[in-house]
Image 1: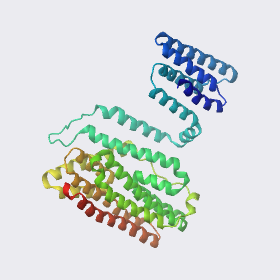
Image 2: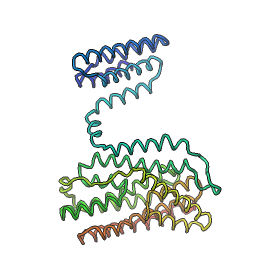
Image 3: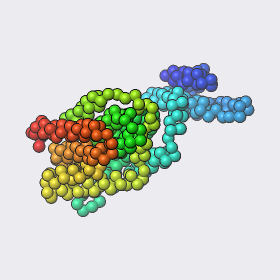
Image 4: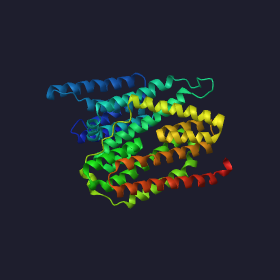
Amino acid sequence: MAVALGIFIGLEREHSQKTGVRTFSLTALACCLGGLMGGLYAVFSLVFVTIGIIGMNYREMVKTGNLALTTSSGLGVVALSGTLFGQGHTFTPALAGIVAAALLAWKPAISRFADIVSEQELRSAILLAALTFVILPVLPTHPIDPWGLIEPRSNWASVVIIAGIGFVNYILMRTLGARGMEITAFFGGLVNSRKVIVELGIRLKEVGPSLLAVVQRGTMLATGAMLLRNGLLVAVLAPQAAVRCLVPLVSMLLVCAVFWRSSPASESAAHHNRLQLESPFRLSAALKFGLVFLVLNVVGALAQRNFGENSFYFVSLAGGLLSSASSIAAAATLMARHEIPISTGVNGIILSTLTSVLANIPLVQGLMPERALKRRIIFELVGIAGVGFVSVFVNNLIFASDH
């Protein structure tokens, strides 16, 4: 396995006109033998490889004035993996070798991605990492208020999950958006469907009728992406409720797909710039989402405790107008903590989703200049919401015995 790993990584270096197959495979073999003998022999083999790496870099510096850092790092991974193989490990060194080979082989793609990512997006990624790995672990795991409503770690974990989904999808949108506005609209919808519809309306006013089909299809893609995101949030935050959300969410998603397919494809999307959507993950945006999530979480729990499930539905309705992601995350968290019944939480999730779909109608009414397009999109949004309402009743009949 050690020799195979050395050959595997060495082939990539050979194609890059660098130190190649024999050097990498012999290095892996030498370190594997050191690992088999154990103790000082393993250390001696790693020291021997280190001396070879230093000599290789000295020679490269003399010849070209540069250091062979990438090849040196690859040899280091092969040496450590070979030692682990010799000591009887298999999974960890094999995985490390595969990851190393992938990073070496995907250099062009990684370089293009680095060119795409801006400094602001890099700072956002660092901030997300700090919120996840620095702040989250030190938050209390128990409620900190007398009523048992605010549990900092679980609440903040929900914020981090949604922020992470938004950030990853934004990077995917930036990476793939140049292939067409429809792809951008889909990935943008995973972040914020309303911003996508606003941007589509603005772009339609700028470009003209050539974008009519793109705007209609993009609106349906953004709406479908929002439905997918909401389903993913439920699956992550409240897995026990995911099955009960399938009928309404899948029904609306299928109707959305039918409307998208019914519109003729347009070649004009490829000739226009991608949509200009700002990064969804900024500190102010994260704090705003966290505040909305916390308010909905507390108000929803209090409403359920004091006024019954009907009052919780009003909270879900208001949450859908503000942010369907916040509302759904709050409902899922309350279900996970057994603050509300699963049936009530599922109905609240679907109600928030329906409200979010219908809340786009005023945007379409105000932004879309073409009457025919406006009427068609409004009809489609109402149709999606109508199917959602019907599917809620069907869903309640299916799970009536569990109420």
